[in-house]
Length: 147
Image 1 (cartoon, rainbow, N blue to C red):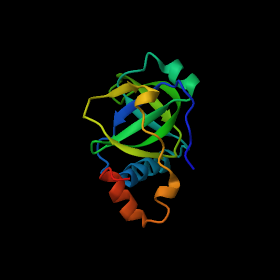
Image 2: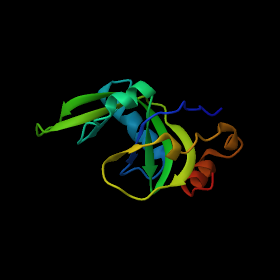
Image 3: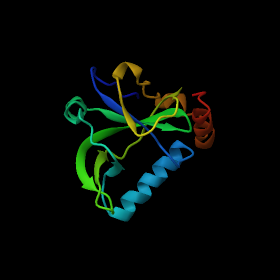
Image 4: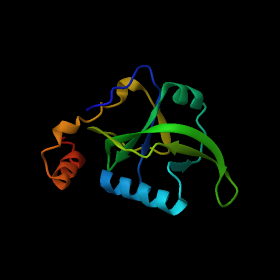
């Protein structure tokens, strides 16, 4: 069943560099949680959002663009000030582990993350739309933007 999002909510959108599919992203994140022993995901980024409180108060998500297509979102739990191994200031975006598939939507490339308004966000993908398809076929159709 689709999870509906209350409005207005401010979200983030980010390119997922490296993963070829939603399954890849899920695998990378699961491996990272296993390596760190943590129950959440942390995505390190250069800039701390100035509108972080607005995102957190509204229950915002990060929308993942994989191979030029928005395929999923994850709830943002927190923002943490961090430093990278070179001591440079960074922001860790703390994410709830479940990836929520969205209706695929093409998106042009960009650098970093961007604020993402609720009216621009694709709806969650109905689970029933892919329940009867083999998982590999459903993933391939999502990657092609056909589901």
